[in-house]
Image 1 (tube, one colour):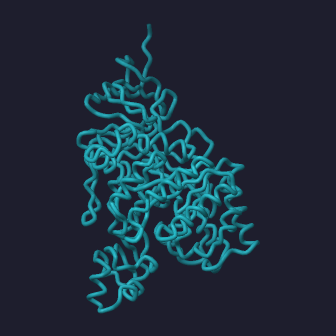
Image 2: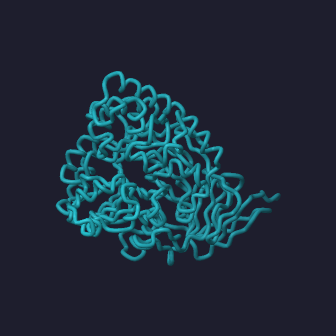
Image 3: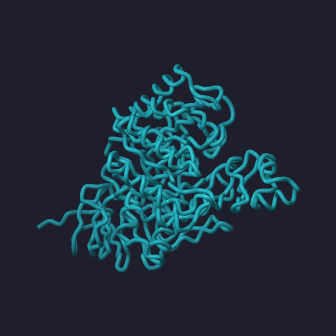
Length: 483
């Protein structure tokens, strides 16, 4: 009998396949970009053999909530993601995307989180997809279309509702982007640049998605006191368009709302009996974004990560700057604008409750252009595995992996990814379940995680023992396509 050839044979691994099923000890064979065999004591000729004894082999992690839109082009090695075991990133979240965008000036807040004016060079979704392909990033990329990005293309004043003509223009641009392979629409209704958009404006856009089997994700209108009303709006909007809903970074923010995740999760589960809904979450009790005057409070620490108004104040607490300047917190925040901030406004028990919820996926929500980023940029996925799974036993390892892989691929429509299965793409991560942990901290956030051994993307070794092989094998993933 003639033995079949393979490029890579991973032997003796504890395989956790991304479906939630328990681990099995098995070998996995890769040929080209696909998994060609899974089983005991596989025998192939040629290629590289990897002894994975004592290690876990899982599908490459899928970061469903990122703001890596321009970084996958400008910094294609994506070390802050591949070093976590992430093989695929979803960009275009919170209503902000790099395409389709035609700026008339500097990018409005919060689109400035993605880069400077020169970084927005993609007037159509197809030009963005081509740029990602040309850059050949180390991770796969799939993209949503941002509601705020569409608004900025067709409205001179973002602080008002769009008129009928502007809505029609946005719908047309969204339809073109969906035809070119976008995953769906995202909104960031909590931000000033979209806050004045009434529900009907968003409904009109969401109505364009069903014909493309698209999805709607939303950074809701508020995550503070009015969160139930904001959830209701999100449910109604998605139901109007007959599309799945994903609530971005579900949380209860502000001290007055600590503990309310019992209420929000019960509401989410109730609604899940009537329509397709899910959510994502990052494993930290602090959020990060631009400095928002509506979130300025003395109830919790606010750390300033960057400031154009007073660059020398970056790296300090807002309260300390206010004391130094002898100003109220709000006046201090105004003087710092535009600026970025980390808000320590969540309760750890709420974070755990959302993480454990069965419909929750993992997303980092990291900001790679921030000079002092939230540690989630470098540590979110290993933190789930090490701190919440191993140390706190919040869930078993197969469930943790499912939240990072199979569930994510299913909710975002990523064909043949997220599950270790013959015929699927060989996006894989090999890690030590006993040692994997995040090392990035709020004071020292740019730190690679421990315990991630090797990562393959589309069958190519892309990370090994802390080093980056020469080959970058990431692809642009279009909705409805198998490539």
